Image 1 (cartoon, rainbow, N blue to C red):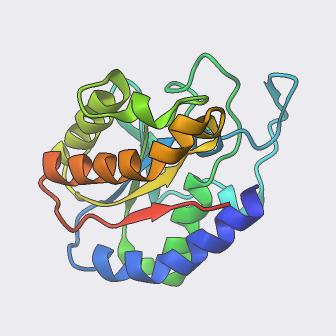
Image 2: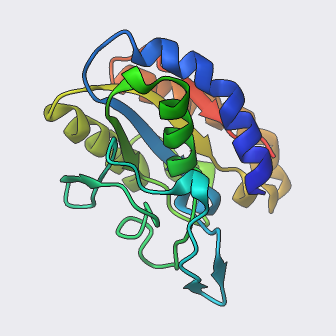
Length: 197
């Protein structure tokens, strides 16, 4: 699944660069969704093999917001203290941030805010729920140290294919989720990069 994700992310990077350059502060990207965003690359039999592909290598210009709301150097697995009930491995966040910086080094510092939790349904991301509240709380904490939320990377949907009703209601629920995030963060034009596989 990761190759199609990277292709989609690369296509979206040029628009992200334009938005990032509008402000010299930290360019903050929220990472939300389920297991593929949380990172399952290299996980076999509930253990991560420790392999980090070159496109996901650490970079001093990339930080991650830890579960206790502190900025630290970003390393895989990004979601290790967020999606802690499952083994996390490599996800798309580091590859996205490294690609952004390769295309334009003037971006400065990229702050990644892991929020994804494996196996979650879109209904669990509804406004007022635990996952939604955590996403908003972490986004608000991320900007306190300086910087601006520049985008949301969203990779979710597999759990909504289990029953017909969830599948039929998915688009409406997803659009409502995006609208609520933009409203509650007071970012009506927040770019959302949705992974489609």
